[in-house]
Image (cartoon, rainbow, N blue to C red; front, side, top):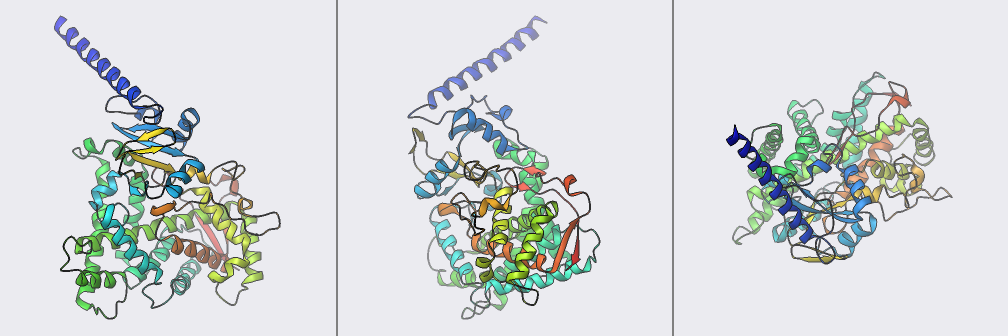
Length: 496
């Protein structure tokens, strides 16, 4: 009995000593001229007890109220510097873009992509493939047809699907995913897929599952404790099967392209990449090789599908919640576009209210609230602090998009946030849903075009209604982690 008590006391003593040492090390590292301040971490657990994994944005907002706009939290044993508010986010990502351009540690993306692709890569390989991919996207699908035409053509298929519902309640999730995904598929793979194609629907399900899993509590825990969880079974591992399924689909498409490639007449992104691989086949350490092609095409496919389709889904939810806003958009569409032709990008300048609603949807939902992590490649002096080389940095985009000085009552959905008193469109430097600086989303232009054109086309043709009382509709994300996942809902569409 005595031995057991002695053993228990020894464990408690060791834990206390570990906590004291951890506290002393933390005190020695933070303060002026050192790491930014923050809550004292526990050994191994870090600040887990202070972090609400179901809503990281709220947790970080509360900590910023206590520690200021630049502070440190420990995700497990790793320190993470958080930038909270427009001034510090702008200073890091825009004013000092080169110093803060590197991608920080993101365990799920790092394990899935192994340093390849566009989103989770760094250094020279990242620069090469990003530059190449931006050029490919700017060429409007390799110059065959403009991106706008592709979106307009796809909107016809989407309208057809909505017509089939005949005013009965439906969930728009998959039809929106298919529509948006088909735009990026036409650029990357050179083809679109039928909305009833079982293989294509399975892919949409994979994409959906990845977003939900990465934003779940398990996804957040994996972010903090990947070095331990990598060796343990559990739900955190399921996301990698979803990644593998998507990559297998991309690899299959690449094989088909290899068989039909005409280097003088590339039909899509994959053809261009294959041609670039041939050009650089004798160059040692070229970034253009088969594994990187699969990963880059995968990155474009998933990024070009989920962010925009989830934004549109959230947009429809907000429009059935606030029918008067929907009516005002329809009045503007009728005035500027009419009913006999499709809305075009050129109409946007004559449609300030619709443009304001599109911006307000993106601002309100803050789809990627924390941004993807950044890092610094050398010890960096920032404000009064030193951020050590390799430290992960979270520029909290939600803190910019929900800034109460720039957007009064930021947690209310109100298109007036983007309108001047005379009804003209009001630009804001605080509008950063796609991040900012060197790591701004390469598909920003495409996404903005899609959100505007798809929403305008749907509302030109249909009036959308909720199946419950609008006041009963929840517009709170079901999950808030790496992204804000919109709640599921049903709606009805009546032809106008």
